[in-house]
Amino acid sequence: MIGYARVFFIAVGIVLVGSDLPASDVFIGVSKGQFEKIAIGVVPFSASPNEEKERILAESVLKADLLRSQLFKTTVINFVKGNFPMDLTQGLPPKMTQWAQTIQVGAIAWSKLYPADGKWTLEAYGYETAGGNSVIRVKITGNNISALAHRFSDKLVSYFTGEKGIAETKIAYLSNQTGSKEVTLMDYDGENSIRMTSDQSIILSPRWSFDSTRIGYTSYRHGAPDIYFLDIATGKRRKIFSAKGISLSPAWAPSGEWVAFASTKGGDAEIFKMRPNGDDLKQITFHPAADLSPTWSPTGQEIAFTSDRGGGPQIYIMDAEGGNVRRLTFSGEYNTSPSWSPQGDWVAYACRDQGGFMKLCANRVDGRESIKITEGGNWDDESPSWAPNGREIVFASNRFGVSGIFTIRPDGEGLIRLTTGGGTNTSPAWAPR
Image 1 (cartoon, rainbow, N blue to C red):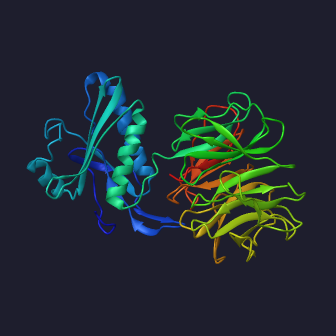
Image 2: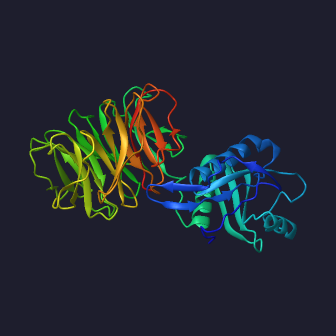
Image 3: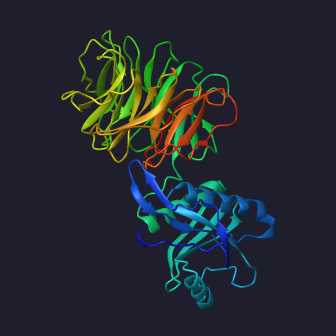
């Protein structure tokens, strides 16, 4: 595997003409520290003239994925036709290897896209220029060209950085684009949205299972606010928990053995946990204040939650059995909706600013540092949820009028708007993988 210490290129052609990134190649993130990005490009995809539109789509998706990973920088290189063979299936010719080494190109990616049996096939190759041998070779078939490019992107990220990519992950959210607010899924880049429920009732707090196969949520579809689990593959839903009062925010433990949630079944809001089939119900907070919005640590040993036991809502942490409760947030009078980072060192949450608007903040779990992720503006940023690699956070915001879904880096940079099709979109949750 190529290490972080070196800087690499994946060739797009043969004449280097510049870079589309600012001068700094160093990424500083909340969880990742500091490192040099890998300079990367893509050899133009091979496809017949009849598939030019599809070729451009696949190529643009791959480039966008690699850039958004924050592990690469893209370099604009002008492809000069005829200097190198268009088909690299058999490996890199010596002339290409020599040229690549001359301009310090460390790797080359090349793909071939073509239709087969009513679907699309992508043959994709990644090469290290030292020796010209392929180190990545995939052949994937499907109906969705973007999904094929996402798969290749994740393969490149995994091999050249050692980190799992997120291009194939999904984001769940609530959308009323079809009338009633329903659980909806989309790709991590906002494409290919699909409605998953037709409850035509109030739906709250969708959360992913530990293995990304199910979504838990609260629905009033039968009049009472019950917790349901939705199977992503089959579309079937099952009522898991029903009780007097309201129950919401089902959160799976990383092991999959427990689901924590908040319920007013006994009067005031408390945190409970149960098995995924609804058995072994256990109450784990016992306080007259409202305890809400549980989120598990990556180890499954602790739970962060919102409580107003100190006056206004603040973020607290306890162990998985409800003991050793400690307050995490002390800045601001109103902090809610915690989300524990995949690396375990930060908790993001919605924080109210001095103007009365909700923004995104994050605290180190040890309490040593607190940061503002978003600030300023007369709008609300709410419901943060971490990407599985810890490099982005998805959230809901009404900064352009109606509420939409956005992503942002923990350092407050790299804002991306995911939903643009109208309607109100809220309560995003990023799938673990």
